[in-house]
Image (cartoon, rainbow, N blue to C red; front, side, top):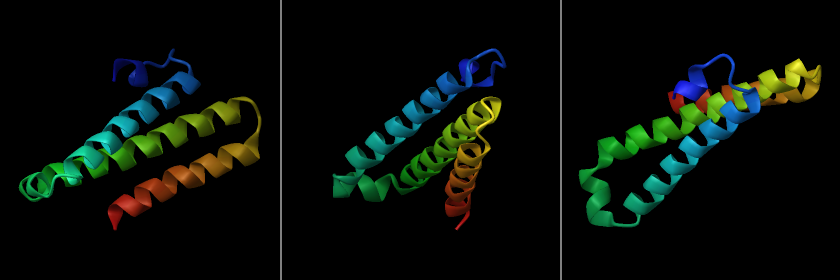
Length: 93
């Protein structure tokens, strides 16, 4: 978390870190969901993991958009902004 919030951390690294957190959340969701008895008793935890997954996907896309804006590649940056917004919008529904 410190590297994600430090301004001097390169944007590409921030994106990779966020993707790592997202990947961990996906693995946890998969592992817990494969055991039906564990899924029911951990429903709120599963909801939390799903929210973490979507949040860190949006953070990763946001940092990639920033990186491409720095390179003056506006079209790619806009695509990542849209991807970040979709990740957040899906979480709200």
